[in-house]
Image 1 (tube, one colour):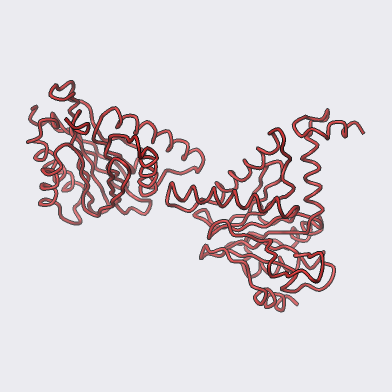
Image 2: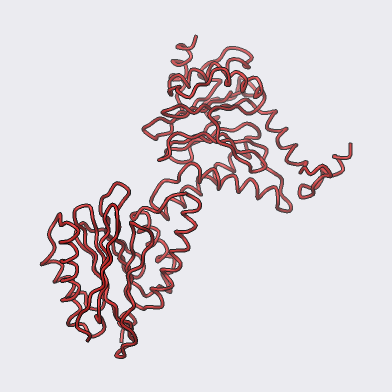
Length: 204
Length: 235
């Protein structure tokens, strides 16, 4: 049993034309037992920046809290929101600080830079950062998720199309995963607003 | 005078509510060579007199204006060695910020951190305040900025100001000459004229130092030749 598959998760983030979308499944389980189906793994940092965290749920929650702490102080000091690229580096740094006793979480950062350009990046458990122009995934069934995203992603999708694509990739991706699923939530971030939709899926 | 009874211990307030060591630190600053800064619409200039103790000193090795980051420079009035310690700390702060955020530190943040260091030394046992006032100049996303930081740790943003020996006259001169629309080239000229006011002898590229940051966000200390060119324009 791997520590990364103790709880289970599926997270997909994609970039479109001046928009990004990020979604996750809703299952909270402990190994084979499903406890609830209302636990999203995507957290809002600010209006234009969302963070998805897979892996051990307790570490995901703690990391989220610690980063909110850092971001709140940053906002008070610098009187501005953190840019997604800056946040990505901050997260990478924070993870590497625990190099020899890491957080068992694999993050995906999705947001819009101040000039409206989409920003996506993902990291491993000790903070090795990788930026992407198309999509970023993490979870307990990476092969399925990569396969779906690779086939379905196209450049310059609008917000509606992006939502459909992320929804299909996520749902088909976690279909075959026993540890992820039981519903999904997807946030589409554009210049003026964020549209969040909850999906009803196969509850297994 | 009753004040002097409280002037031995830094961390003790005098009856009038002052920390006398800080007052004395400000005296050390006021005895130092004049430095000034002017913030223009498209940049900032800082300048200082480079008064050397003897003609035998190799003035090319004396550096009073230092770069902290590619976009931020600093000059001082007061004790040189104290300045070097602060520059070291400021550079480290800036680099730590860059390592965490991969973004260059905004001027106001660096000023805050440096001021916090200076304040620390007014409230810790066994240390004395820094005997320098700093003029920090930089260009970031909020445009050109100029800050003064005192030994107490208080800091102020200025449109134009002077510190050191001739500061009152220099500030009066700047008040008359400053306008909100001044560009960086004019600002350099004004800075040189202000230095000239209190200078004993002839200004030249080898006895003053000038640092400029423009819209390219690159802080540069002007070379002797460049300073001489500006001086010729001002004559």
